[in-house]
Image 1 (cartoon, rainbow, N blue to C red):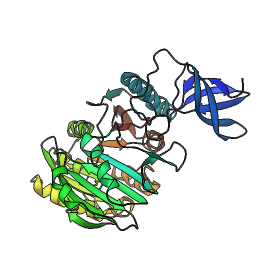
Image 2 (tube, rainbow, N blue to C red):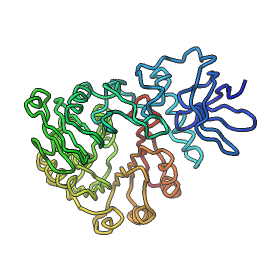
Image 3 (tube, rainbow, N blue to C red):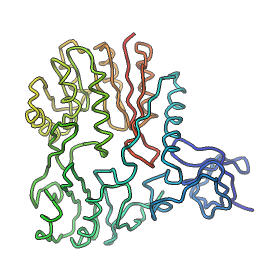
Image 4 (tube, rainbow, N blue to C red):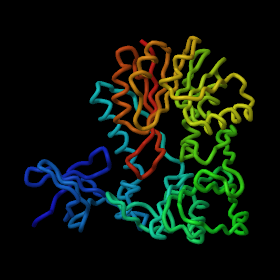
Length: 398
């Protein structure tokens, strides 16, 4: 039968892999043991990218997805697996990627407290009045009224978006420890505000095209008894429970008197590190995040932190103190060569590298392993039921 394949293994993006007519077939939303009729999305001389048209046979332990949008939405990849199996997959994935560059670390997996309804931030697309997420591999919108991996208070606001008369645009909703909401909208449409409804929904602020039109453009979040002011456009981890575990890892692994926190955001890791250090320097490129960081340090009575505004590669040379620990939490693209060279020149005793992109992490680590041992790797299940995970590598100077 044409376009039938048996899935034999999985790739690093959560896709099933099979083989047919000398080509590798990547089929999304499948696991080893599945036999499927597939629909071709893209075909080259060596591989086929596909999606399931029909299951002929299913692996015995395959699950029915808990989300009704699973087989169309491009958001989650692993809802066809038991939660513990997803952790095994992620551990093996990280292990294999690091092994390719000669790193064979001790790996500890930290699971999510709640594997559903855990995200404190959602980014929705609006097209011709339809609100939802992109269909897998396309820019078609899958209309949703509830995201099953997002915190409930965020889901309750999706109906309110429909009342705003947004025809086309983007809507980001984030919440804090107290279920307060911060809404950011990007659109050219004239929107309607139902202000009388918002106090009941705990809406702290609404920002339209970077201008605050209701309430405030920031709110307060609390993690591990530490207070953080978070602006609507600042980076803040989407999983508060796993974020608290990250803080604990930082607290346990900061060594020495002086710490350098690269890509410091709103100052979360700088503040955690400052509890065990004499001096912390944070470098961050987003102005509003630095403003938040300064306020956060003051709010938590941490007067041993200096925050520097600018690109890491442009500002790292300003640090003249002897640095004992470097914390790195870069964007997905990882580190540039200038930054790597400067870290090697600084010669910290330890490096804590945090990454949500394992492939780029492995490439960056190649630059350090001649001078540093990878003592341990933590896999934090920040993004349950997706192939993504947060990795924390502890490096010690040889």
